Image 1 (cartoon, rainbow, N blue to C red):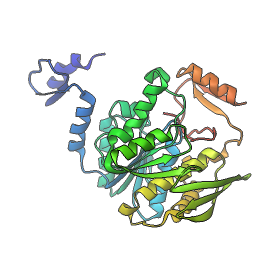
Image 2: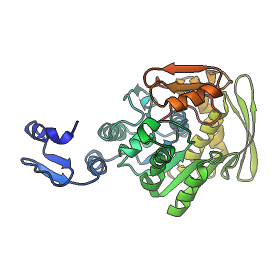
Image 3: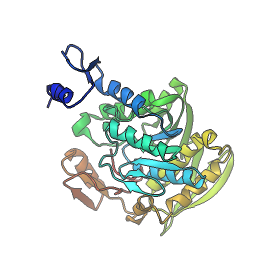
Image 4: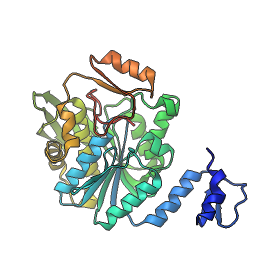
Length: 350
C-alpha cells in the first residue's frame, strides 16, 4: 500500500499539510517534501504535542526492556516523583494502566500519550525503544536524558535481515536519540556492550556501567535462593548486600540497569550520591506486590526456558529449543509481561 495514493482523500477530509517525498504534486494543502519522511513527521509531531515530562529515559535491548521501564518507574515513585512508563504493558502510572498494543507505539500515539502524562503532572518517564520503533522513528521528539542497553541476542531477523542490521537499529538510540549531554547506561556483561560504550565515549556522553564488569555498580556475587537471590554490589569503593525477591540472573541485570538509570538522572531528581540507596530501592520495587509485571517473572522456574513466537524467526526458535527443556510456542505476538529466564534480560523481546 502506498500512502501517496490517499493524499487527495486526506485533503478532502480536512488535512492541511502533507509530508511526502519530493517530486509530488500536492494541491489544497501545505506540501512538506523530505526524503526521510518518518523523521520529519516525528519532528513536526513533537512540536505539535509539546511540552513533555522534564525527565525521560529510554531502554533498548532484546530482553529486559519491560521490566526495566517498570522498575525505573517504581524507583522514581519511591523517590517522591510522579512517574510513568510506556512499553509492552502500555502506559502505566501509579493510578492506572492503559494498553497501546505495541512495545513502541506509532509516533503520534506515543507523543500524544507523553504530552497527556505531562498535563497530568508526570515529571519522569521511562519508555521502551524497540528496534522497530527506532528504525521507524517512533521514539523521536523527547529530550532523552539517559538511554540504557540491556543485551543483544537473535530476534526479529524476519524484519531486519541480519544481526548487523538489528544491532544498528538498536544502537540508533545512542547515536541519534540520546541527548548529547545525556548518559548511557550499559549492562557491561553483554558481548556488544563495548560497542555501545565506545559510541557513548565518542559522542561525549556520560557513562554508567553495571554488571560483573561494571564500574558504577559492580555485581560482585549473586547467590540464588528458593525465593529470590542475594546480590553483593560494589559502588563507590564500598560493598553492599541486597536481597532481590526475584528469581533469575536476568532479573538481577534488570534491577541493576534500572538503578543505573536512576543514578544517571540523579541530578535531575535530587538523588546525588545515593547509588546504594537506589540499588536497595530497586530490590524493594521488584518485590512490590502491587505491580505484577515486575514480580511475575520471578514466578518462572529457575531452569532456563525459551519463549519464541511462532512465525518470527524459525532459526532463532530452533536455537532456543536446543538451550531449554521447555518450549512455549505461540502463533501470535507474546502476551504482555511474559518473560524468559535466559540469564540475560527478561521480558518481551523486541
